[in-house]
Amino acid sequence: MVLGVWTLIPAKTSKPCLIGYYAHCSFTPISTIMCFALAVIFYWLGRRKAKAIQK
Image (cartoon, helix red, strand yellow):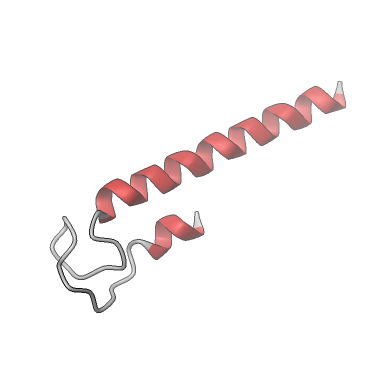
């Protein structure tokens, strides 16, 4: 989650991101979605593993 938010923060870079402003990552919409998707997958896998251990 933190990395997804970090990609949205404005910064001084050489070229604008795909949304149109200067952010840490030039692929901001894509990288943000990828970071959030990975966070959801790891959260889901962790909860699934925790439930399996409890049984």
